[in-house]
Length: 496
Image (cartoon, rainbow, N blue to C red):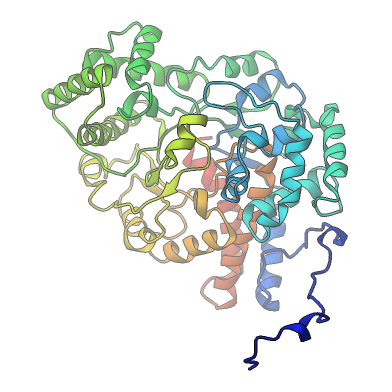
């Protein structure tokens, strides 16, 4: 080891350089994600072939129904790839790139005066950040298979990319409904609040287009006392339904009314994004008093956190009761510390990529709900997690016992090749496969839907191929399972 400080001898030392990124072609290997082991890879290939003709079911997501109602062309590449996708701008923000510089609208509705091409160049200049990530794999899939691009995105190819995609988006073949058909989507569910008028869904139905776009009932704005504008939202709920929502009993009637309205618009599921999985089965008097106290404090100041948590917990049981009545499948998405970046929330609002996973208890948290409804045959509750430690310890055993419970697919930070494989390995031994619901993409980024389903199907093939190669599963059974995991489970679980 050299110990002197004289560095003159380093002057002419060559500096290691990487092969220029721009010189590389963009291609998607036909065996991507499959095992390097030849035997497992061959099995996975055979299984994947069975999935290729299957339509896509997207039973839970956050695409904008206005796209399909108006069927107007997307404005530009930045609007398609950057603005709706918090996976993308979250990574850029982590490296000090402001949302303003990307043209992301602020919370007050103002839109930064940013040239969309300049925002695109920022993405291209920093595309290395997405190397090896699911977002990078999804983007490359769309660039290659949807737009036919054969060069990697980089600073040097940014304008070529922009011009190619922009020209395509102006053609009829790239309008939202045409892409929906091209992607072979059978059903796509959006997610709306109870105080949404669903006018865009009505426009879709009235248009005569045969694509099936349905809504899902997301009651958080009117059941979570800590949701911004809670008291105002309750007032709007009353105005829309004609019920006096200052009264707890009429408030519940208003919720039933909106659930019926959503069902008439095609909804088959509800969705609940509470901070925890806590449930509570309060008596009528206790629930009435809690609601009155919360509403009074929401109108005149802050709600006590313990009251907010108890009310959310109670309303999960109430929503389960309503699901037993009207048949909506219930989805519970707990464990996200939402809007963790307070400054970003103040300037840009919710869903800006600042949601962080947190530890989540299910065994004790769900017990009041399960004590009441766990053995029902006509209620279906799909549980998701951001806390992977709960898969084998809590969720798989719960779903492997209670008739109402099913396990949702890896969600959000875990809808990755590794996350999908970890989930399958952690749950199939206890819950089996038939207590799963297949895959849902849970995305705002419409063009990434086929990429996400391609990845999920391939990773299911990887897992099944492992079981076949180790003689734990016959290949004919794996062939049935891959079709179930890719299509049948979601269709049944979401009543599609």
